[in-house]
Length: 259
Ligand code: MG
Image 1 (spheres, rainbow, N blue to C red):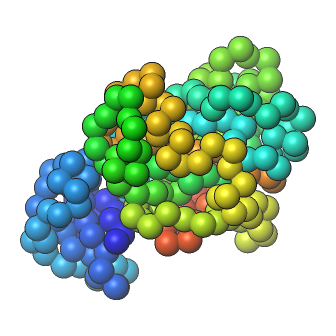
Image 2 (cartoon, rainbow, N blue to C red):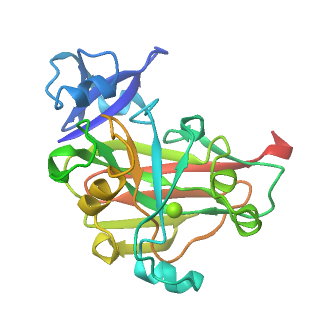
């Protein structure tokens, strides 16, 4: 099953939807978080052709975005880091969220911004100290953990480097099927491609581990780390993150100085 948040043609309001073939059903709920809390079983109240809607970030305002650093073996080797014995976690503010087709803005405070294509878990059910993580995962979406690498290198915390507005593109849809691969294209050239089995800490292990710290709520996002091949973004680039079953999250890049 696939779900997405969308704006119908000629309207300005965001609705949660369920994708069936080339249609999207508009669901009887205030938001995707409500649909998720209802296990995706909200009633359909209208149908729209997929090509006539604009997809936005599937979750507009999660209570939190937790990101996992250093989780793909080949990427850790690329950065020259040690393999972590426990997941490295940090958070991004929800104000950083943008959707498919939106523009990543390169802030004036940095001269080196990288893309990091990732699969993100969408939490389905509230839980603390979760023992049965599978039951708490609603689905998966594509995520770009955009990072000001120069700021990350000089700063103890990663939140500053990763928390700028527009630094959390996600979407286009939520798939309830677990993706087997993740791929990133920069200006049409493939720059990242990995099996999700290269992750040190798998999807369920991450949910268990993070729920030892904090209560996870429906709609919360856990970005699970990036594979080998991160690289720099520049003005006018087109960056896309794709995973099987989810679709392609495509964003353009603009410079704050030129906007
Ligand atoms: Mg990352």
